[in-house]
Length: 179
Image 1 (tube, one colour):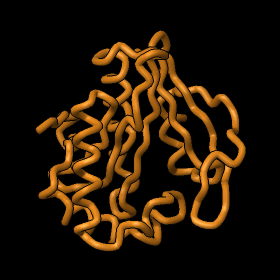
Image 2 (cartoon, one colour):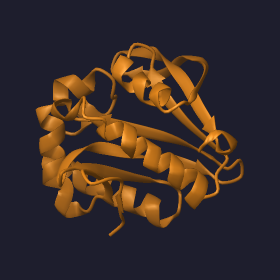
Image 3 (cartoon, one colour):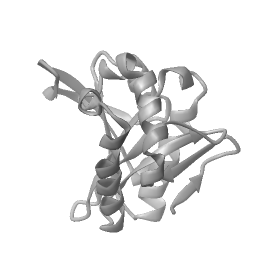
């Protein structure tokens, strides 16, 4: 199965059905924390709920339309990162990510996102990568800002979060800007 070593502590790995328990346990332990910004948290109530989701992610990868992968920190599942989909006609994609609460502050997601951007430009030949973050999600916004992505503006009512819409910040980087 696809695994990308990012550095000595961090790697990105396609999840398999056997990873459903670890993924559920991770989400369940950070449920309240993750729910603040992720609209899907309440829809996953049991380990078994992840089996068809993981199958969908594997189909996405095999269709060459992006991927959703686990982020491992020192061999332990710490969160997820991936390309939501790839727009091959316009050579662009959007990266999404989340990290469990107890793995925050180690630079894990910053290096994982950098690795995905490198894959997008140098592996896939894309021209543009975007990240959308909730306007008030300071930890999430710090990642694209830290790696030099440009803030393009605010997308009003861009995402529905349980009982309300919220605005998102649009960040982007072009292949010509990536070192």
